[in-house]
Image (cartoon, rainbow, N blue to C red):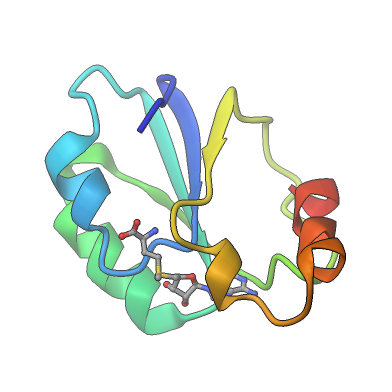
Length: 95
Ligand SMILES: C[S@@+](CC[C@H](N)C(=O)[O-])C[C@H]1O[C@@H](n2cnc3c(N)ncnc32)[C@H](O)[C@@H]1O
């Protein structure tokens, strides 16, 4: 996973990769997911990074009003979204 020190992870799941592979040099990490349970588990797993937590659906326009990120990961998220690649692709506009 390629991440900068100012990173947004979308579709966090259990936070496995963040927990084991997020560089210690990370200055800002934010989590975005539809599911509050996933956000709770992941933010707990990487609590020492003091993650920003956002609950939202990438298929809807996002209104986060926060500073921009230098990198965004969407690992294993696309297959969870309904529709064809055109439908799913709206996610990239929103992010
Ligand atoms: C398969 S898990 C990804 C796990 C994690 N990224 C990893 O690599 O281990 C998919 C995640 O995407 C989230 N998700 C599914 N649809 C979503 C949507 N429309 N907007 C935001 N998150 C969504 C699910 O709640 C779940 O946490």
